[in-house]
Image 1 (cartoon, rainbow, N blue to C red):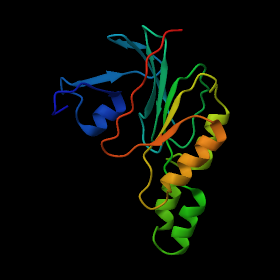
Image 2 (image 1 turned 120 degrees about the vertical axis):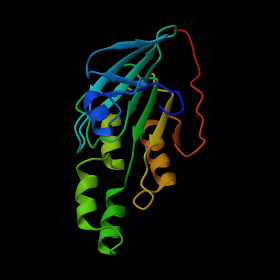
Image 3 (image 1 turned 90 degrees about the vertical axis):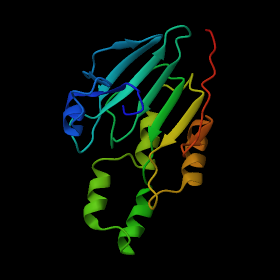
Image 4 (image 1 turned 45 degrees about the vertical axis):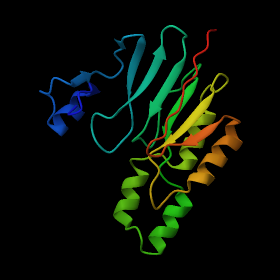
Length: 182
C-alpha cells in the first residue's frame, strides 16, 4: 500500500493490520465475486489459525484461464475445476519437522502451530489429487519453511505426482502465464 498498490483482503485482516482506513486497502467478502479490469476474482475462506484468511480463484476473462492462489492454510475444503495455474503453499515436510523437533531446533509449540496453520507437502499432494488438473500448465510452490522444507524434493515429488511443470517461489522469481485461446 505504501508503494501505491491496491491490496485486497478480508475485513478481519484489514482491521487486524490496522489498515482499514487506507485508501489502498480493498476489503472483500469471501464467496462474493468481484472484478479487477479483465479479471474475475472469487475469494474463498481458508483454514488457518487467524480469522479472515482467504484464498483467491482468479479468471482472466479474455481467455478463460484460471489461477488458484492458496497460502497460509492447512486444508482446503473446496475442489476446483479447470485450473490452469496453481500457486499453493507447501510449508514443510512432516518428517523433517519431526526430526527438527527431536534435535531441539524447533520447539513443540511451533510444531503444533505449523500443523494447525500451514500446508505440509503431504497435504499439498492430497489437495492436488482431489482437484481437476487436466488443464493445469504450471504449479508454483509458495511459503516454504527455511528449516522444515526441501525445495528440490518438494518440486520433484509434486512433478512426479502430477506430471505438471512445478517451480518453487523464491525472491525475484517471475513466472509467465502464457495466454492461449480455447
